[in-house]
Image (cartoon, rainbow, N blue to C red):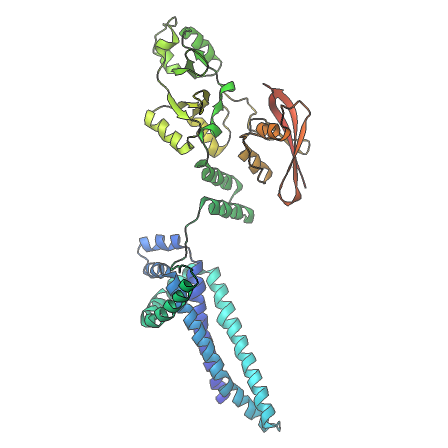
Length: 432
């Protein structure tokens, strides 16, 4: 009878231990944003659970107190009730009393420890991690009552631990930071993609969205060598000729290539009613000017304020660095969009010779996504710039550079064609 009673007491205390372990892991693993969404539609359990998650340190102290006390009580009742009972049974079988008590005590401790470990620790822990939201919601009412009734005792131990931390010059923290930095979100997106929970296309879009706030106008702009311009003194008929080749907007230059005085677009020409002999300066309109270092979200805001889709990018020396459009900003999110400034195959990675054939103007971040590795940081924006930086000279067709990658891999880049003294197309390979 004593053994049976002891077993029932151990099971009951183990259930309490499991309750506190489920508290600890459930409220740490639960997604607060999901609780907020449920609370917003009137879920009482979610509202209570959310209130508890706002006192993470206090809740953990309460859970640890419960786990410690119930664990001690299991040890306290296991030996006198189960161990002594087993000793009596063994004594009745002719085993000496001292040996019987010792064996009974060991068996009682093994039993209670095994039950505590499996049913008091591992099972509730794994359940809370696997189903944190239901666990947190269902335990919310009882957890709140427990913290209210024993709050004075929990605060006593909490204050004692905080004083010790302060003596060690460590600032106590009363809640766990659940906010995520952009770097954290990148790791979450990458892990979700690798596990198959997130489609590759969606993960790429999310990565580009996270990168957008770090990109500047210089990163997304069309560089000046690829920009078609027109002199202010030329007739509008010349602008019509240039627009016929696919350019709907043209920067208007004054005394030199860096003196931007405005912009002329197809709509301005159409409003002239055939008067194409007038000077471009008389038909030009002011253009938005942005510095090359301006973040893309701010560039987008400037374009929205002006009601235009086109801006000239100025470098730190006051010269024209290039132009940027809403389409260029959109390309930072969805990838290359072929327009009047881009060759038909630009931005497209064509499989070739166990690698990829790329345009030299392909941005480094797109190359990183293609090969699945980070590339060394440097003062360059494109794969052509990387080649020039590594070679420390202007390359020739056939030149090859090798760049080390993490985990012992290597990337080789072979220059195929040259245009304006820089790589126009390159062949990229990754080797283990």
